[in-house]
Length: 88
Image (cartoon, rainbow, N blue to C red; front, side):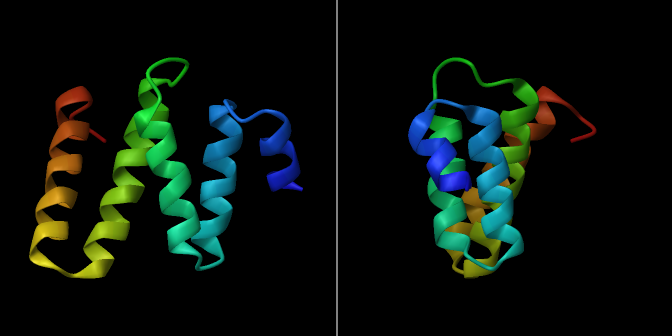
């Protein structure tokens, strides 16, 4: 259902977020990561809340990998969130 909707509307950020969340809940982190990165790479039509959500979830995926470089990337994402909203 989500994939068909996304194919029909590939720039739909809320739909990408919903599908990424679905993948996260169903333990498909690689699928979620691709969509989250697409949200972060978009240069328009992405709310700051969607960017914070994406950075937060991408950082969790990176922490889960447990490698030093990934942990540093995760920390940088969280720091970026804190710059835009200290309560995020």
